[in-house]
Amino acid sequence: MMKQITPYLNFNGNAKEALEYYKMIFEGEILGIQTFGEADFPTPSEADDRIIHAQFKKDDLFFMVSDTFPGNSIEFGNHISLTIDFEDEAEIQKVYERLIQNGTIHMELQDTFWGAKFAKVKDPFGMIWDLNYTQS
Figure (spheres, rainbow, N blue to C red):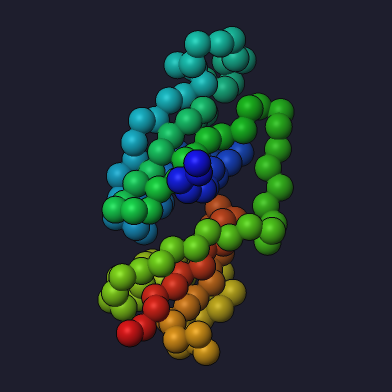
C-alpha cells in the first residue's frame, strides 16, 4: 500500500543554501542534515560539506534534499514542478511574494477557471513551484 509521493530535490553543491532559502520562504524547519563527510562510506574530501540527505517540513509540506556527488551534474528543466495547496488566501499571497523576490514568474497569482488562486514561480535554484488555493 502506498501512502504518498515525497519530492526529493537535488542540488549541485548548494543544497544548504537552498534549504535556508526554503526555510525563510515557507517558515518551516530543516530536519536531520547529514553531509557526505559524516556518511559511513568513502568520499573525496571536496564532498565533505555537501549534503547527502536532509529533510524539510512545514505542517503537511515535506520534501527531502541532497547535493550531487562531486563530478555528477544537475540539469534543471521544466519537466517537474512542486505543487503546494494552501488553506488560506493570506498564506498563498505571502509565499508568492517571497518567491518572486528572487524568482521568475511563469504565471502571476490570479483567479483561475477551476475556482482557485494559482501561480507558477521558478525559484533561484531552478525549482518550479505551483501555488494553489482553492476558493470556497
